[in-house]
Length: 91
Image (cartoon, rainbow, N blue to C red; front, side, top):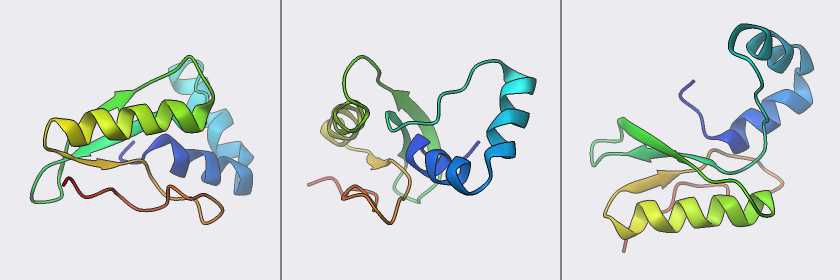
């Protein structure tokens, strides 16, 4: 879908019919933080990581740190109400 699950959660709040349509086509989709895009050095999407099993923000943090640890740029998506709003730069 080209968006981290945090961005999908925001979209669902403003357009609940979006998630209903996607779920009808693909099966169950739970729009909570935990799905993080992996971006290459040119900003292109090269993969994604999904973590589940704890509080969604902690799941997302785990994915973000794992992606950064292997040298890629994590992109969890954006949510103006969240502290995790920008892709993290690997250091």
